[in-house]
Length: 361
Image (tube, rainbow, N blue to C red; front, side, top):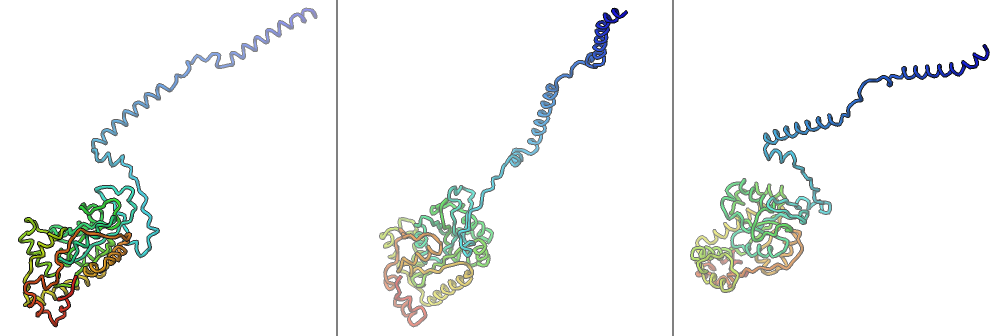
């Protein structure tokens, strides 16, 4: 018995091991899992993505048709906000008069932060304003655009006036004097009777709001101014220079031709005329006095060209020697320019206008 038991032990052990192995395999659910492995989701994702793209394109197409090209451009437009120009170096008292215009007709490019001053030359006919303006325009940084309100439609009402002023000061007024990108002072010439006096209240408000400086240019000798006006009216009718009227000339020959005309003055109304002209100018100066301004006189500039430096300093532009091609027309004494000089002399002798008789320009 003992020998038999010893021989049975290995067999029993093998049977137990086999049973354990079978049980392990039976207990392991993976051994009998008959499910097929899950398919990859990549294909399904690609299908969903494609459908989403098609729907998105369809919706965008419908929106573009409804909005039109303008609406679409508004949607995709990216607005670039430019940094403002630095005014920290400008004295507080001058900030109101320093501007950085952004014209719509061109780009100032590298000069966009170059400061610009606004001005207007306020004068009356035959006061030397044409000559004075050409002097200013000889400065490389100054642009004065002439008598822009000589055309009636531009001064028909205050709205038309302001619209014109805005174009000038936005640097969108094109003329032969325009220096565009790098101009430092922009303005024009405005005669008192070209809508200025009639709309002086609104003009003063505009000048003060926009920071416009006024240059008052007048003539002291109203008698010489009257002679010049009569001679200019005469040439406007006769057109003595080859059928062309010229208010200003560039040669001595042309000046000599125009100066040959000698007007006859009405001595009965002469004092009244001079008084009216004087009061008209004084009243205009008083009405426009509340603007930033400088007053200069034609005779002072003729005698002393350094007076122009005062104007350049007023405009805050560098001092330069200014030149003009204009040639003076009436250079002789008044006694040689008026037909009835003796009558005029007698009419003004002993009056407040006696000083005009022998005063030279």
